Image 1 (cartoon, rainbow, N blue to C red):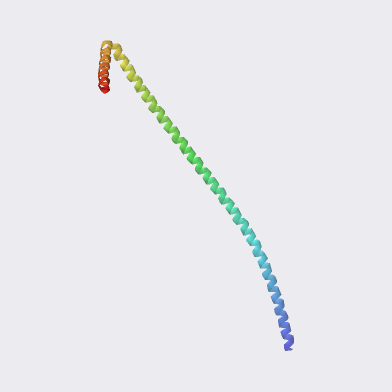
Image 2 (cartoon, rainbow, N blue to C red; image 1 turned 135 degrees about the horizontal axis):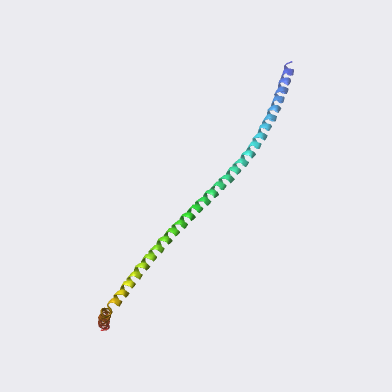
Length: 128
C-alpha cells in the first residue's frame, strides 16, 4: 500500500506540476500580450510628444516672427518720422536763407566775396 500511495502521490504531484506549467504558460502569454500593448502605448506617447514638440516649436517660431515684424514696423515708422522732421528743418533753413538773400542782396554778395577771399588765402597757404 505504501507503493500505491507513492504512485498516487507521484501521479498527483505530476498532474499538479502539469497544471502549474500550463498556468505559467498562460501567464507568460498574457504577459507577452501586455508587453505588446505597452510597447504600442509607449510608441503612441512618443508620437504625441513629438507632435507637441512640433507644435511648441511652430508657436515659438510664429511668435518670434510676429515680434520681429512688429519691431521692424516700429523702427521703420520712427525712421520715417525722423526723415520727415529733418527734411522739414532743412527746408525751413533753405527758405530762411533764401529770404535773407532776397531782403539783403548786397550783404549776401559781400559775405560770399569775403568767404571766397578767406578760402583762397587758406588754400594758397596750404600749397606753400
